[in-house]
Image (tube, rainbow, N blue to C red):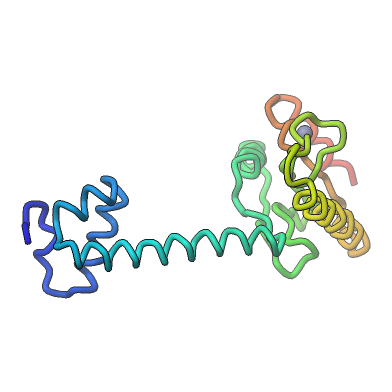
Length: 188
Ligand SMILES: [Zn+2]
């Protein structure tokens, strides 16, 4: 075995393997494995990586299936940055509230939901266009999201929160966004 990259300097096999996997990811796995280990070891490592990748894919899939929204998305960060610049204080992803709202401002009793146009099916928005294939897969899933959103809003309102839904496609105009946020937060 070569030691050109220092991958095998460590005696701890677990550590070595982890480093190998990390390097493999960074430099392209097949090359890395071929150059550094015996064919048998390469097979084992490839098997392990396969399992890991499959695990990650399955996890992502089940996250989507469960309908758990991704947190800290780009649109969400944009809204948070804006609020911060405006000098507002806010809290994130309060799990004890319906739908785990992206942003809440307890002092203003305000909840802000930032929705991706496709996943939450922004009505009339071109980004919400349905895929032409596998409609039997997409339709029920997206319908569930829409239903859940409506339920979340209803429950938040019932608990005395004011709700602002911001769609991803509406965030590009910074001035407009700021005006909307200002108006929403200040209106009581
Ligand atoms: Zn949209």
